[in-house]
Length: 246
Length: 109
View 1 (tube, rainbow over the protein chains, first blue to last red):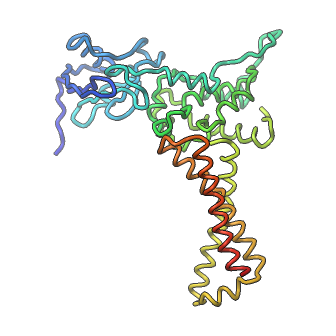
View 2 (view 1 turned 90 degrees about the vertical axis):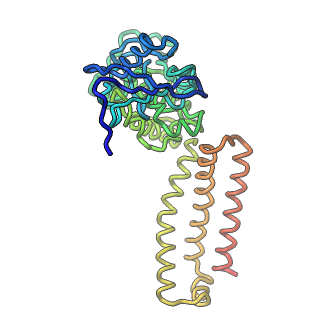
View 3 (view 1 turned 180 degrees about the vertical axis):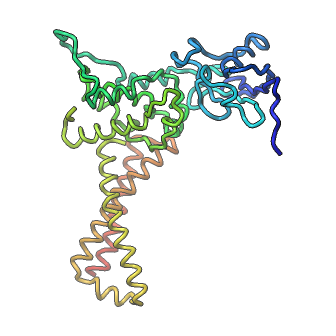
C-alpha cells in the first residue's frame, strides 16, 4: 500500500546524542523549494534550541553542512526536501558515517583533515623562490587533470560514502587522495616524489576498491575514483622506474 | 598495500588467469577422455612441460593468495604489523612447499 505524503507537514527523524543516542521525531511545515538545511534550522530555531548541527555559507561553497539524509550522504544546503524525502514525504537525518559524532548532527572533522596533511595535500613551492610567475597553459593534460579535481569543498560526503574508509580507519580516503592528485599534476609543486611516497603506503591509494561511491555521491560532481586511479598509475610507475615522468 | 605488493598481486593474477584456464581445460579433457589416474601419471611423469607449468602455477598461487589474504585481514580485523606479515610469509612458504610437493609427486616421483 502506498503512503500518502502529508502536504502540510514533514515528519523528520533526527539523530540525538553522539555514538549512542536515539532518533527524535519533529514535525516541520512543508514549504516551497525548502532545503534539508532549512528544515534543520527551523527545528533548532522554533522547536529545540539544543539541536547541534553545522553550517556556514548555505550556498554550497563551505562544505560544512553535510549529513546523512535518508541513508545517503548529502550537502544539505543544496538538497531540496522534495529530492531527498522518502515516498511518504518524510526525512531521516543522521550524522555523516565514518566520522566521530560530536553531538546530534555535528561530526568531528579533525581526523579527516589530518589525512589531507598525511597525503601532503598542501602546495609545496620548494626552497627556491621563482624569478617570475609560473606560466601554466590551461590546455595541458596535467592542468586539465588537476582542474577536474580542484573544486573539492572538503564536505566529507565522499569519505562518508566510502566503504574502505569504514573498514580501515587508517585509509587516507577519497578527499585527501583527490587533493594529492591535483598537486601531483601541479607543475609548480616541488614535492611530487614525496607526495607519491606519502600516498603509496599500506593505507594509501592502492587500497581503493573502485566501488565508486565517492564519485556517485560527490555533490560537486568530482570523480575521486579517477583521481585515485591516476595516483595508482603514478605510484606504480615511480616504483618501477624510481622516478616518474610528469 | 604498498606498490610492490600491488604489482606482485596483479602480475600473479595475470599468470593465474592463464594457468587456471589451462588447468581447467586439462581436467575437462582428462575426464571426458576417460583417463584413469594411472593413465594421467604415465603422461605427466618425466614431462618437463608439465613440471614447469605447474611450478609456475604454484609460485603464482603462493604470491597471490597471501597478499589477498593480507588485504582481507587488514580490512576486516584490527590485526596489523609485523606479526601479520610474518604469519602470511609462513603461509606463502607453506603453499609453495605443499604445491611443489604435489608437482614433484606427479612429475618426478
